[in-house]
Length: 366
Image (tube, rainbow, N blue to C red; front, side, top):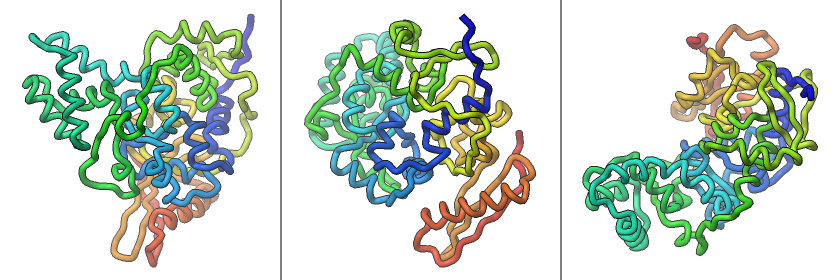
């Protein structure tokens, strides 16, 4: 059977539509987080910017209200990195994703003479139930139990294994300082419970947010492996396409797939946004020569749906400044659209500033 070919631009527009980057969504922050499965949270301000750029209206206070009300949680999740998820999704998908983050723990444990996983788990849970702990304290405690295992990497791996959450203050806008961890069961009154359907549901949710996509794409986004079998079980419920390299792509039959020439407005993205990290072949959003912007955790902007440069803000007294660094010379129209959208972003980020400036800087290396 010949599968319909989807061009790079068609894949771009399909993904942007699902990410609400073609038209801002009239959803609540909680509804949007659920639609995206999870929103990147490695930097405290990133989720706020990611929501602002996708929603018609987003007061910053709404995200903290969701965290404090325990409707949204911050934890190690997708790819073993920090994300914000709807609480029900966290409880459902954590058992599926846990092996991604706790892999290092099991590898080191297998090589550590005299290691007792039951003793380690019991000791660490007792330690955490005394009071919330910082990652440094978790790391120190692990080192006391098994000196060779007292590393930052091990503390992160153990956080995933024990299903630890970050308390809301670590996700506050502009948050600095110590991030406190506690067990999910302590904070929520419930622990994640494995479900036989959760892995299939995660695939369907991924496709709804990032499709059309290959098996490898989903594995890159999630950090999971050996997902081909799950896709095969779901095949009768999915439709298939091929990309310009001949790779098989899966999708939900009723998911949006706009035509390639649908206009894509300027959008500003935070660092590590999952739009850029959700596929093995990232060229549907960012050209291969600029893949490094995602790895280095730079804020990016989209022109015509593709990453075309980076941005950052500066504050000097009462003056807020947006610095835009394009990869190449901008047309007058593109520059104007960046100024308009960038001005909106800057006033939202630094709402108490008295003066706002936008500066364009020289092209970045490729």
